[in-house]
Length: 281
Image (tube, rainbow, N blue to C red; front, top):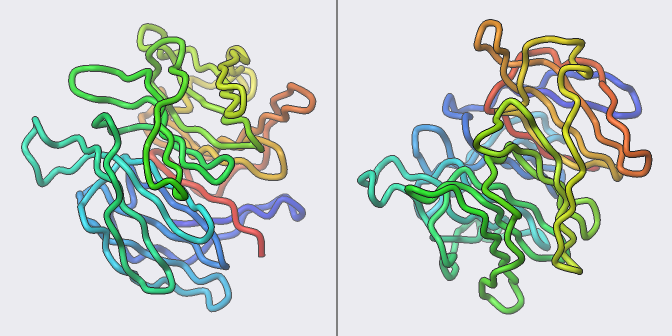
């Protein structure tokens, strides 16, 4: 199921269902009037594309390597992916450090230099025309490392590490700042917000996210939610319910200019392990 929120109208509307049934643990990106859903829970390398103008889903070239729970971002009209988990490999080799790039004009993928570390369930964002890959799992560790890929140089570099290992929900960039939502492994019920300044290479703690207050005391978590940035604000949609184990239809927003959290109209469907992207039409 797919749906779209229009900020000026303040409401959600449904989109046609994606052709794949494996839209779980997948990232999505949007540009050029299209929404790209990449990979899948089944470990297949497929990619589905939604055309907003014609209101239809299409299939595009599959990735060179099956992956899920990986980093993904758009730079100058090309889709970059890195890391993730491949269920086709043995447990020892399931986590990936490989990377590739999709060229829409050729409908083809090309291999890129691999990251320095294997990682899955990592967070990613594009800032300053570079792809930042943050944290994640690398058996048996929870990573604090951050790697950045510069397409102009065609290489990976390491950045300032996170202050401690985090289980990351997601992240999004607002200008040069990457907002990361997650928690310490020992305090998974307490979600926090940290910001990475890509210019200074410094981390800043923005405190605990008031989930209970925003969701009116409900026993809920933001795990499995979609995190995106739009018009200078951070949006977090969906999550998981401690009551019945199902997804959430909630949407909360962080407004950096006011250092304030607010709630938005609910989605039409409850969602967990969902993905989101912003498109300007």
